[in-house]
Amino acid sequence: MDSPMHDILRAIQAGSRFLVATHVSPDGDAIGSMAAMGHMLKSLGKDVVLYNASGLPEHFSWVNLPAPILTELPSLSGFDAIIALDCGDDRRGGKALQDAMAAHRTFVIDHHLSNPKWGELNWVEVDRSSTGEMVATMAQELGLSLSGPLGEAVYLCLVTDTGHFSFENTSPRCMEMAAVIIRQGINLARINELIQNQWSLARFKLWGEVLGGLTLHFDGQLGVIRITTEQLSRLGATSADSEGLTNFVLRIKGCKMAQSLREDADGSLKLSLRSVSDVNIQPVAAAFGGGGHKCAAGANLQGDIDEVESALIAALGKILGF
Image (cartoon, rainbow, N blue to C red; front, side, top):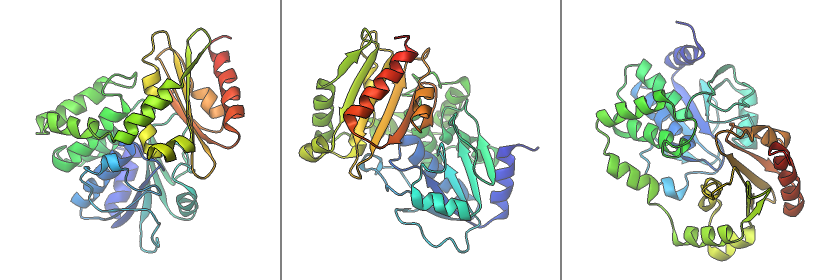
């Protein structure tokens, strides 16, 4: 059977050594899909090297990885291919990975709407709940059980990218895969505790301060927050501690869109946009050089935070008809 997934599977089976990489500031789907792919490759007898420019976030330190995650690219001599996971474009993994992918055979596995399919082989399905769901489908195609560390890694992807099965991307296929993992022995209480109960005191303080500074626009339909480098430094928090803040803003009654801007140490701004199911914010992220999904999108920006924030608010207001 010919399909992008089967093309990649055949190439993997023909090779022996692979670099598995994902985007900077990795979320649950990025770490989970990397771990799942690594375990799958190991089960096939392949050599695996994991790479992420940001490394492993502390709140995912419990994840059972098939190999350490390198933060510097090794020499790619002797590697059959780079497998790029959950990267909406070739920039998402950082400049070093972008340059490496331009010079080496690359397989792209992703579910982002804006993916331009830059690899030699590309499997992009935008109706998938997560990249981890796609890796799990490959594992099932190979007859592997979604149990143990592989099953836990896939479950992490499913849960985090669907907002614990509450977002619009929660499909029957996604739920059926979760059921398979549960039937194959995952300790559901334990894994959910590991996923959810990882907050530091600094994260609590950051969330309280950031949410306390929230502003509402357009009759309360847009909630806007910002995270500054000064706050992160003063509170002893990291950029990873801001993960999930944007989603939380949507809990305000009547709020249809949430916007957050985070100042990063290199002077750039990290934009995160979220929306309710009947509002498409992806075009706004794309207009600012980013991408993503209908209800979850973002971009990396340059500029003064006040000016960028104002421009974004105006663009989102047009989506709402203001």
